[in-house]
Image (tube, helix red, strand yellow):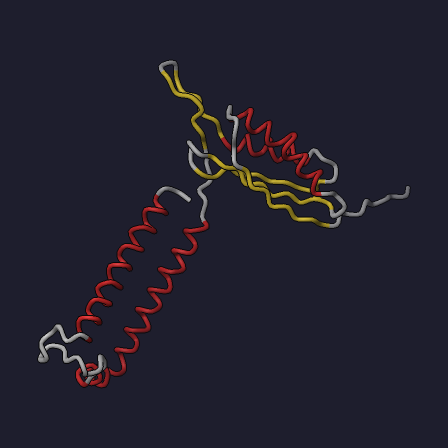
Amino acid sequence: MDRRTPRGNRLGLLIIGLLLTALGAFTVARGAGAFPQSLAPAREPLVNGPVREAFTRYDPWLWWVIAAGGIVLALFGLRWLLVQGRRARLGDIRLASGPGGVTDLHTGGVTDAMAADIRAHPAILGASAAMVGTDTHPEVRVRVVAAESLPMSAIREQLDGVAIPHMRQALETEHIPAVAQVSLEEPPRSRRTVA
């Protein structure tokens, strides 16, 4: 998630909260009779004669406008859900900056090396890694495909003992959050050729 996502969430929730508060306050005030009877009689239903008349007067296309508004709201909601799960991949990380120059690290090489470290175990069938987050708070996402017979302790040992220490060394940091997604598969059968 980039920094704009939490800011957008707060702004959207603030707007929705203010709208719902205003509607609630209006409903309570109307029910308590705070408005003059000519503007909003407390005992009259909200869907009264003028509202019903508007729906009958603009019958065919008013429903299309309501449907289009519902579709737009649904698309906004879908976009919001997709943004929640999005993690921005990092391209480069600035390791050092000073009067002598800057040191940038291309994350693609580091993640490729990490995946190669993981795949070095003979029972691991495949691995990939990606760095997400920000320059100041990078995180690693790892996908591992291992043979069904491989115990989880061996996968953890390969990650904790080999791949992650090499990653920390490359990034010159003591701590880097890592999430590993492991799937188990039946190893491919070796083919024998007879000459």
